[in-house]
Image 1 (cartoon, rainbow, N blue to C red):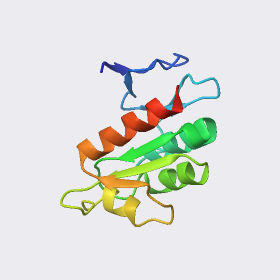
Image 2: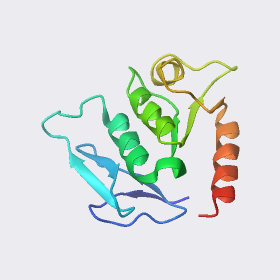
Image 3: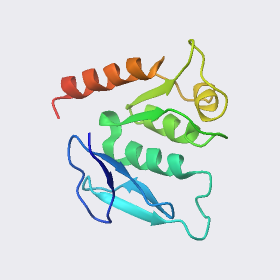
Length: 136
């Protein structure tokens, strides 16, 4: 899968992975295009995943999938809750059946439900199955 640095206003393409620049955090916009939020003033410091997941909840609703793979602190926990509340799917990676300390552990123990907890292979299979069944 190609990994692309997102550009403001660019339309998301199926089969691509998008990342944001260090000071331009990635967010979804109303028309399924890229929105970059400037972070130079630290207004989103340690909350960039919550920012992205919140936009997925708002615009993708039940079609949204949020996955927490790694990281420290608790970024992503509130965003996963928003995705769950919007009817989307939430996933957290685990090792030996338990989430690692940091973002995975905090996401798994936050208020929102987690639909899938498992290895990277388990999460990849679930995403592929859900995307195929959604007939996007």
